[in-house]
Length: 76
Image (cartoon, rainbow, N blue to C red; front, side, top):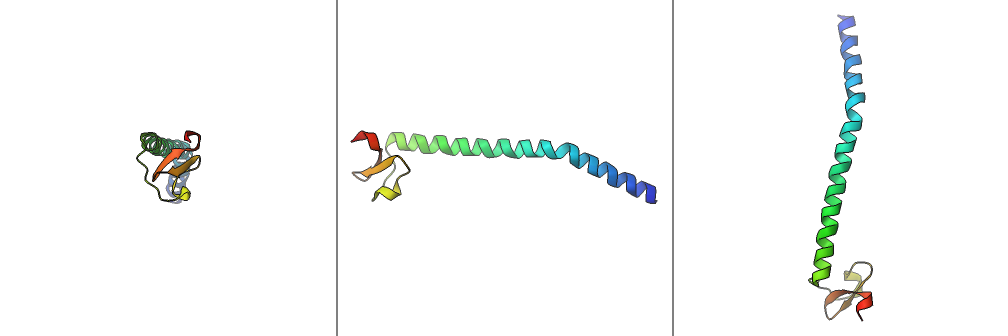
């Protein structure tokens, strides 16, 4: 009984060691895909000029509030 319990523990540890890097890669891939999708959505929204603001701090870095819209700083 003790031998079977130890073999089970060793096999579980080996499986965890094998699958942990795979699970980390999957989690990393999902996180990067979500970040990239959000980045693309925000970029499209900014390029279309649909971001409404009242002061400069409402806009992301590199943009300023002109006429209640976030516009790139080089647009003035």
